[in-house]
Amino acid sequence: MITPRFSCSQTEKSVIVSVYCPSVRASDVEINVDETLLSVHINPYFLRLNFSHALTEDDASSAVYDPSTGYLTVTLTKEVPGQEFKDLDLLAKLLAPRPSQAVPAQPVIEVVDSQDAAVDDVDEELAARAQGLSLERQEILEAAENDWQLPQTIPEPLPPLQTTVERRYGFLDTHSGYFRHVEHTENEVNELGSDVETCSPQERRQRRISHEEEKWDEDHYMADFADDEYIQELLAWRNPHTTSSEDIQYTEQENLVMLRLPRKEYLPTAEQTHDLHLTLLTLLFAYAYEARTTQHDPTPESAWTLASLTPAFSALDPPPYGQSRPPERSAFTEAELAETFTASYRRSLAFPLYRSFALAEACRADVAALLARGKRTVTRCLLEMKDILDHHDVYYVYSKIWVDDFCVWTLAYASDDNLAKLAETVKGLRMRKSAIGWDLEGLEALTREDGARSPDSDDESEDEIERMLPAPL
Image (cartoon, rainbow, N blue to C red):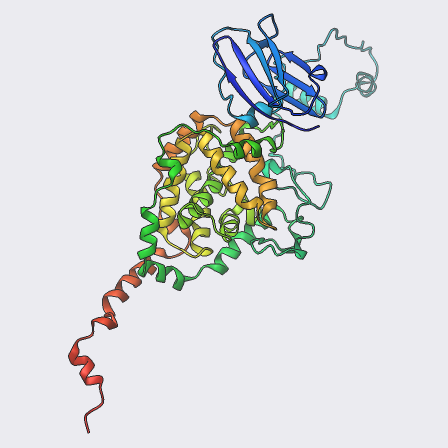
C-alpha cells in the first residue's frame, strides 16, 4: 500500500483531512473512524491517522473527492465541540501507531480457593514430601522457629543472556546487521573495525576512547588557539533556528520526508527514555558544530563531520558515559550532562578541522537554544541531519539506525516541557577544561608565552634588516 500525501486542519467543531490520491474511483473509498483512529483506504492508497482526541461520524461529517485536483477531503466531527486538536502539523506523530493499553494495576490471576493437605502422625520427612515443601519453604519454617534469622547473602548479578554473537545497537538497541560487510565499504568513521557487529558495549567504549587519544594532536590545538581569527568569525555566527521569531512551518519536502519515516510504537522504560535525551544532546552537538563551521551551508564533508563527532555513530557508543545516575529518571544532573558533553567536546578537539574549546562551548550554547525552541525545531534539525547523511553513499546507515527513529520519537513522544527543562540545565552547565582529559590549560599557557616571546618577523626593525644584509664591496 502507498501512503498518500495529506494535511490536517480544524475548525471549532470539525477536523478536516485532505488526502492526495489522484486517478482513483471515489466509489471505492473506505473510511473508518474508531474514536481517535481514522483509516482511509482507496486502492492503492492507505492512510491511518491517530489523533489526540476522539472523532465521530454524524450528519455533519462528509467525504468529497475532486477528480480535477486529485484531493479527497474528509470532514469529521469532534466528539467534544471546541476541543483543540494539537500537533496536526506533525505528520509523523499522526502516523504513529496507537499507544498500547496500560498494564492493569490488579493481578490477572486470582486465587479462588486454598486448602492444606492433612498431616497425620507419620514420619516427618514423609509428611514434608506429601505437602510438597520446597527447600526455601523449609528454610522459612526453620527461621520462624529461630526468631526469623535467615542467612542472607548478596546475589551475584547475572550477565545478560546472549543467544547470538551479534550485538544490537542503534536506537533502543533495536538494529543489527547493518555493518556485516563494513570491511568492503569506505567507512572512514567506523572505529570498531570489521568486528563491529560483535563488539560488546564495553569494547566499543574502550576503542572509542583509545581512538580519541590516538587522534589528539597538541600542535593542532595550539595552532588554532594561537591563530583564531577564523574561529572568532565562527563564534560570532548565529544559527537561524535559534534567532527566528516565526513559528515553525514545515516545508513540503520536509512533510514528504516525514511520510517516509518508520511507523513504530516505542515502549522505552523510564531509564531508556532518560538515556535517549542524553543521546539527543550528542546528536544536536554534532549538528551545531557542523552548522557553525559551514554557516548552515553543508559541504561534501558535512556527513563525515556529523558521523565523526557523534559517539553513537562512529563507535555505536551512546550515553550514559559515567556513573552519575540521578535517583529520578525525569531529572538531569549537572554531573551526567558534563559527562555526556565531555565525550562530544573530546571529539570536537580531536577530529575536525577547527579545534577550539571556545567553539565547543558555543556549540553547547546552540544545543540549549535549540532545545528551548521545542520539539518542532529539534525535529527540523534532525531532518537536516538526515538529509545530509542520506545523500552519502556510506554514512546513510547512521540515519537508518539512529536519526529516523529519533525523528519519530521526538515528534510523537518527546515533551516540550521536558526539553525546556533540559535546555535550562544545559545552558547553566559549567564545563571544566580539566575534565576533558588533556592538558588544555597548560597548552594554552605555553601558546601565550610563546607568542609573547617570539616577535613577528614582519615587525623587525630596519637596523636588524641592515645588519642581515651583506657588507658593500
